[in-house]
Image 1: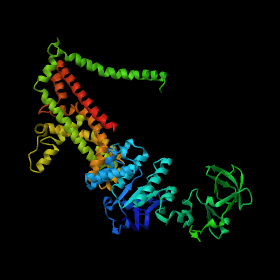
Image 2: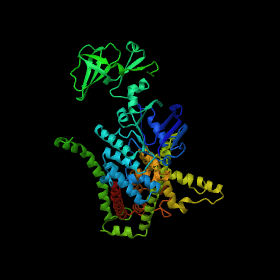
Image 3: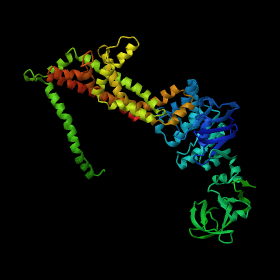
Image 4: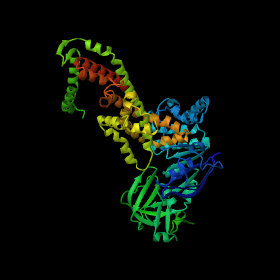
Length: 334
Length: 288
C-alpha cells in the first residue's frame, strides 16, 4: 500500500544535471530519510516523487503502477512543506478540510476526519483560529493534519523542522516518529540534519551531488560507511579522517576513527597532543586536539566530565577494532 | 525617541509641515464654504449678499444634478471594474516567466506616464474619430459603419479612456502582490488536488484581496475628480457631465460662484462618505 520504486530517474535543469540516473526502492511502511549537505538534490528528488517537478527520464512506480506522468494530486501522496504552506486566510479547520473538499468527500466524513486528526495532533482548541495566530509548532501540526486527513499512500516531508527552535524540534521529531509507528504509512523525509536522520529513519539515503552514496539502516551507516563521505557525514561530532603515514601503517589511503572511539589518558597513549578547545557538556566532553604529529585536528569525545583544559597535554589511543580504512578513491576497505 | 524632551522636539520640527498642510486645505475649504452661502455673480453684479441655503437647494433641485451623480458613479464603478479584473489577469500574465519580461513590463506601465489631457486627445483624434480614427478604419475594413464613439457611446468611451490610463497602476500593484505569494502554497494546493481555477479562487484571489482594496480605495479618490478627459472630449455633453464637471460649468460657464461652491461642498461630503466607507473595508482587510 505505499511502495515507491524509482528506476533510472534523472533530472536536468537546462545543461545542469541535478540528479544523474538513480535507482531506489522505498518499501511499504518504511520511514526513509534523504540526507545530505545543502544542494545535494535531496529536495529535488522529493519533488520528483511528489510530481511537482517533471522527471527528465526514468520511471516512478507507486504500488507497482507507473506514476511517471500522473499529476501530483492523483499520486496519493501528501506533502508537508518547509514553510508549512498553510492557507493564511482560512481557519485551521478549513485548512485541514481543503484536500477533502477538493476531493469531494461528504461533509460528515470531513468532520469526522478533522476531529480525529485534531485530537491526534492536539489541535482541537485551535480549529477556529487562523494560521497567523498559531505558534511554529502548532502550524507544523496543522500542516501534518492536512496531510493525514487525505489518508495518503505515503507522506513526504520537506525539511519540516528546520524553521523550529531547537527544543521544539526535538519534540516534533518524537511526534513524527510516533505518528509513523501509529499509522504505519510510508514516509519520506528530507533533512540536512544527520541527527534527525539517525533518530527517525528505518532507512537512510545519503546523497551527494545527486548521487546516492549509501542506502542503509542508521546503524549500518554508522558502523560500516561505504566511503569516506558517508563516514564524515554520519555521526556527531564528525569522524576523524586521517591521511598520510599514519594511514599507511594500516595499508590504507586514509583511515577514519570516530571521536567516541578514542581513549583519553594522562600518559602512555599512541598519540600525544595539546588541547586547543575543550567543550564541557556535562554528560560528555569534546576535545579538539592539535600538535599530535598528524596533519588533521583530532576530535575526541570522552564520557562524563574529564578534567583537561585548554593547553594541557593529552594522550590518545584509538581503539584498533574501530578503525575504518578507505582507499584512494574514498571507498571502504574491509 | 520616547523621552519628554525628544517628543516636544519632534512636535516642533513637524509643526511647519503640519501648519502648511492645514492651511493648504483649510483656506480653500473655508472660502468655498463662505461663497456657498452667497449670491455671487462676477459678471452680473458681483457680490449680491447672503442667501442662506438657497444655493444648496438650487444645486440639488436642478435637473442636471441627479444625472451628473449617475454619470459619476457609472464612470467610477466602470473604471474600477475594468481595471481590477484586467489588472488581475494582466498581473498573472506578467508574472509568468517569458522572454523580454522587463521590456513588456515597462510597456504595460507606460500609459500611466501620459498626461490625462494628452491621452484623451490621442484617443479622441487617433482612435475614436469617426472619419480618420483607427477604429473607424477598422470598422470600415469589415464593411461596417464607423461608430461615432464620443456621441453614440459617450460614457463608454470615457470609461475606456480612463481605464486605459489607470490599468497600469492596478496591474503594477497587483503584480507586486502576486509576486509575494508563497509558491509553496500553490504547490500545496496542487498536491491537495485543487485544479488551476480552484487554486486561483482559493489561494491567489484571497491573497490579492488586500491589494485589490488598496487599488479600489486609491482609484476611487482620483476617479471622483476626473476632469481633463471629459473637458477635451465631450465637454460634458451626451450624458458625460459628472459632478465635478457640473461644478465647473456652474462656476465658469454660468459664472455663478455661489452655486458652484455649494456643489463643491456636496462633492466634499460625497467624497468623505466614500472615504469612511472604504476606510472601514480596508481597515477590516488590513487587520486580518
